[in-house]
Image (cartoon, rainbow, N blue to C red):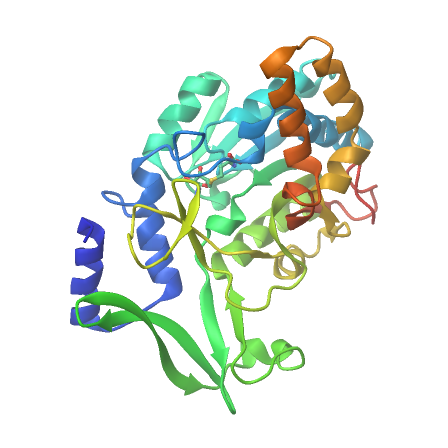
Length: 354
Ligand code: SAH
């Protein structure tokens, strides 16, 4: 049993079963034993890898997309460039390098990273330096100014609650104990008007997920974009509306039981993009677009060819494999989606349809 498993079991004995959201938040961000709070999980030697760690092309293209959106809105200055959950800082480093040639962009930019993990803040400092960056814990700390934001695999890390439809109401799925082991159970059936919109597409026994922190953060982003201008690119796995149990754990690049080793595995859930889009109103949202289609429209093909010209042998093979991994329908191309938010009355960010 991990130290965190024992602490969670003690908490359940004292106060009863906890929501999945409380379990997830504790496992990821407990200051002493939390998964993100205590380690750098990315890359071949870690637990999982992400698009910016796969190829520099990802951050470059997202950066140029945001810079074009900035130009399309009249190049407002100053503006806030924000990345929540920047991991190792790789995406931001690639974005900054690619946008250096855009006249005025860096001079007008105030860079803010939103990161709660002290360990990852150190890694981000090593990647990006300290001079240009302001770190924040929360979206609320951002200045009231035009906002250009990119978030990759951030919203999937935010805690979800799960509800199973009963005969006349909903049962929350909770983490309790079976003997000494953590086990999932069902809370009592209660009426939940907040889930009325899911009555049409569910039947008794079906599970739906809600992510209150995700909606609150999307609300903060949308309010700034609508009031001051700006755009956001939110990339993650999920769909327009999530249905069923998508709560999952990964350790050492393989799926594992989410209750088995709290604090030692990454926990995520699919993103419900419809919920984020609605919470971001009055900002406008573009049509949800598969990552492969989006990167293709932004010109990943010619960029991959240009980079390939300088490579040979194993380096060329791994570059081509990275290109396929980001774009192929069987790899990340279709599972991952892009939600674009933008100021009403302006064009959506390049690569996205209104
Ligand atoms: N965007 C990066 C990392 C994704 S992993 C990439 O693509 O590689 C999730 C990131 O979100 C980590 O940096 C984690 O520490 C951070 N994070 C998770 N929950 C958070 C929260 N509630 N507030 C701020 N950052 C959070």
